[in-house]
Image 1 (cartoon, rainbow, N blue to C red):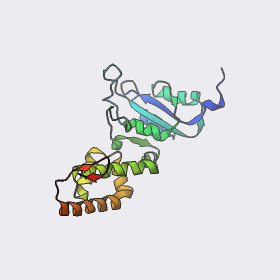
Image 2: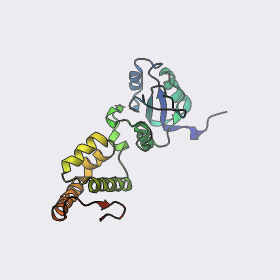
Image 3: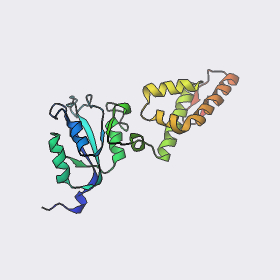
Image 4: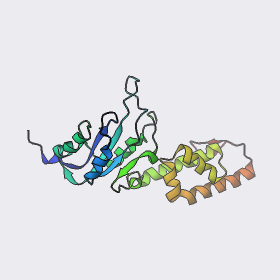
Length: 206
């Protein structure tokens, strides 16, 4: 059956198994001048039966124009990769590379992502306005719950534990709001004492 026009798209994804890929597989991708995102090595994934999956990379290939399945297959064959699949949402794919939206899966670090030919990973991971507000409110709840009184304590926690989602928000846009929120709570603690707890659902001191 002839392939339809709808089977052509700019973004494709495939899986690379280090044990079977050529040693220079990244160089092969570079030679095609394709923008590419390579996940951290997924070496802690578990299948549905609780058994470890073979270590693998998720690879996002982003072409400058639409490509057919056969055109992409020609490349992935040289990588000894399983068949490629269309990628409908490059941002969601990069988030999946880190398991950002599934806390039950092994979590991987954004700094372990590799990019080829100039991909700006920060743009692909940039949250929407509503997502950004949700993350800021989550940090505020954390500040109240843990009675954070110094901005540096929040930053240190984020760097170690939430580098994928909290850190970009803190560094890029929310420093002023969060720092002043902490100062305000510190002032309140100095007046009311530091032993109160907070109803995190109602946002009330109890």
